[in-house]
Amino acid sequence: MLVIVGYIVVMGSVFGGFVMSGGHLAVLFQPLELLMIGGAAVGASLVGNTGKTLKASLKALPGVLKGSKYTKALYMELMTMLFDVLTKIRKEGLMSIEGDIEKPEESPLFSKYPLIVTDHHMMEFISDYLRLMVSGNMDAFQIENLMDNELETHHHEAAGPSHFIAKLGDGLPAFGIVAAVMGVVHTMESVGIPPAELGILIAHALVGTFLGILLAYGFVGPLAGLMEQQLDESSKTFQCVKVTLLASLNGYAPALAVEFGRKVLYSTERPSFSELEEHIKQSKSK
Image 1 (cartoon, rainbow, N blue to C red):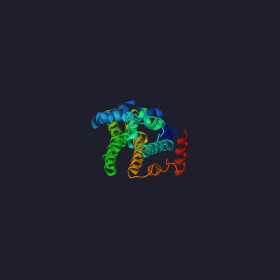
Image 2 (cartoon, one colour; image 1 turned 135 degrees about the vertical axis):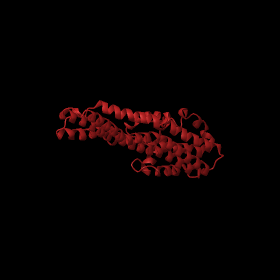
Image 3 (tube, rainbow, N blue to C red; image 1 turned 90 degrees about the horizontal axis):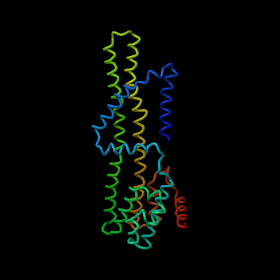
Image 4 (cartoon, one colour; image 1 turned 60 degrees about the horizontal axis):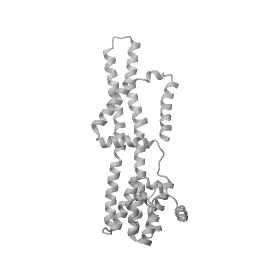
């Protein structure tokens, strides 16, 4: 929603100011300039990116229009679920969760937490490392190293769409100049026409530069920044799981292990100790 509001503010400020200064919006409507800028940008993107990156970028774009799903409610549900899992392990042993981690979508333990179970990547991450804990063949240091490597790979892969959009935005001003130069070339070859018509051609040429810069810094560039912020937010859930499971492996009680995980969250979404404790108590009573 904020993305749409921001775009409206950008267009209202730029085009509104232009009209208030006496300009005519019709002169800015240059579909051929947009064709040159947009077509060149799309073509360069096809050359400079793999199919995997392009596909991931198209898939990620609708997500930026939505509000962030990484809320305090989601984090409390995640930590309550981890508390329940670790409590079951402490009371019944590691083998007691073997059935839960093999089919988490059918597990009574996990099914109480729909916000987490529906996140395929998160559940896969949790299940894989619980499975390694059940195997008993790896110590905490080995699992931590493996977690770090996986999270680095995940972050690098997930950053592809934001890098793609950022590079696209960086190229738009240059493609705007290309469109403007083409307009200038057309103007120079028409130098014999009346001055009034010549002025119109020059104005059309300048619109190319204007559109390239506006699209880059008013629309595409901010989108890349937003995608990077969303990626950082998504990484926090994995870090929370990592710290909590490692604390448990090092012998800390479930309540204290979950506290370790709570501490790595951003302050804007991090629940207080008492809020989390109350949420866990309510979950137990259900």
